[in-house]
Image (cartoon, rainbow, N blue to C red; front, side, top):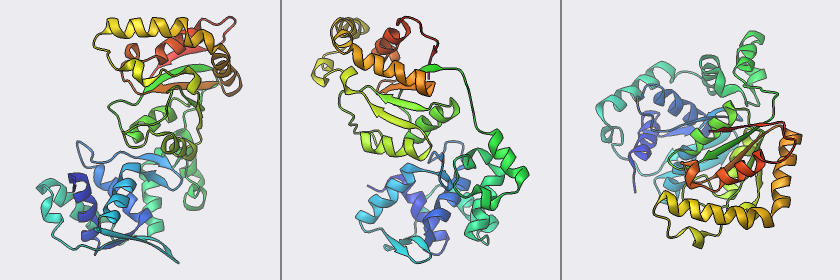
Amino acid sequence: MLYYRRKILLALLEVFDGQLTAKSLQKYLFLFTRAQSVKAFDFIPYRYGCFSFQANQDLSTMEKYGYLEIAEEQNGRFIKIKQTGQYLALLDMFDRQVLLDVKAQFGMLSQTDLIRHTYQKYPYFAINSAIAHELLTNDELALVEKQKRKFTEPQLFSIGYEGITLETYINKLIINDVHVLCDVRKNAYSQKYGFSKSQLQKACIGVGIQYIHVPELGIESEQRIDLHSQTDYDMLFDHYEKTTLINNHSALLKVRELIKSDKRVALTCFEKNPLQCHRSRVAKALMQLPNINYTFKPL
């Protein structure tokens, strides 16, 4: 299906004569979304600056269906339109004009200058860059460094991914200086893009966060089928505390050791509402251990 956000990607390529390098496409797309009140794509600070996992996935999907060709060439990775069409005309009037403005304002920049511009204007997105030191002055690098959130106190966090993009989720971890993400799902698989184990692990590694799956602290999916009220959830989690948490106390202590060694650890599962997720009971158990020196903060 050609979702509206995929039409934006095709229109962007069309405006730039049918092809762009992968890095340039991400940067132009980022600059385009800065003008949108509701952004079509979210971004994280990645190895070469602003990066959208969703856009990258959409490009791969459109290659599969024949809209695009993704070619590895000697001078870079290129994204090329294969199925020509009036894609710009498929966008609303505002988005059409913004794409044309992006081309007019930044289209003459080299890829290096384009990346440099995004680093200079949006220094947060350069905090994990592998090439910022090659492109920026010492003063500009100092501004990037100021964007890094660093905390020394140990803290336990809790975060669910329901209702948010992978990029928004990862940014929450970054701005809270989370060092380790503990996935407490029994089965680390999700139909939501980005949150199956390998995808989430890759995203975390790319921003310097360690990912650890602790399935011993999960709940079997069949136990979660008939949950219709908060009372149903409370009964399930009460049973969970009396069985799984007691039987897997060593896994709980493993998380505590991670807090001791890495200071800032987040528990994660699906549900947005922590009262409807067993991670709240894992957090409760960790906060009730003797001689703790960490605090708790839900994200």
